[in-house]
Image (tube, rainbow, N blue to C red; front, side):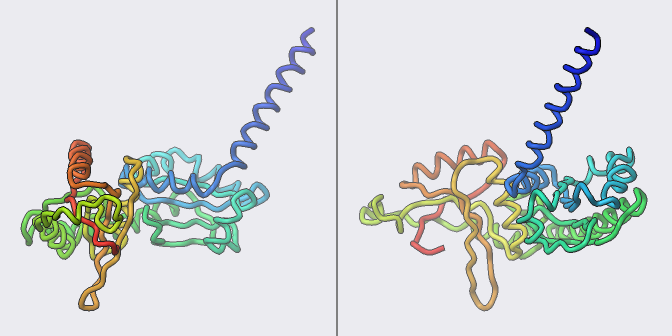
Length: 273
């Protein structure tokens, strides 16, 4: 009887492990998008750890680095760790041109790569490597804060990478611009060129626009777009939300944005991004 129970428990254990392996094999690039959204929401960077079950240095790093208590605590405060098995997520292997294991990539939520290492770490060297780039990020944020203080107060504030002075000026100018009162012809809702949208931000830095877009996607089901406009050889990136049939409909959604600590201004679509 005891041996039968042990056999049953062993079978259950093997079944659970099989389910776990199946779940891991179902990981896709959508999971990386979720990691990016989490990084945006928590104002963290992303660490991509490329590995494989047969990679002995990877298994060594798993025990000595990622299971290290100091590393775990550090990651909880500063980063989102996303592990990629190259045998299960071949698209990511190709996208990031992985040829050596272990490969570790440090990047922003927008996808901008900050650093890439094709070598093994110990706990101390791993933390030092990530910290070095966190310090660079902090220095840039401090410079942005100083630029902000030197200019007028911004009407839009974000918890994502701080905007430079030019971005703040873009936001200020855009939010103060008036919406033209549409005539009866322009209110023809069958014409998609005369629909309305909400402009949530204007940036000179595409990375900032991407980060805001990721944040909005994680909160709302409306369509999110980044429109690039070039004038006098300078590009600006505008984050747009939705396509509304009327100004009133857009204003209702804008109130919902404001309640969720986002900002924006209603605009009328001229038919071009």
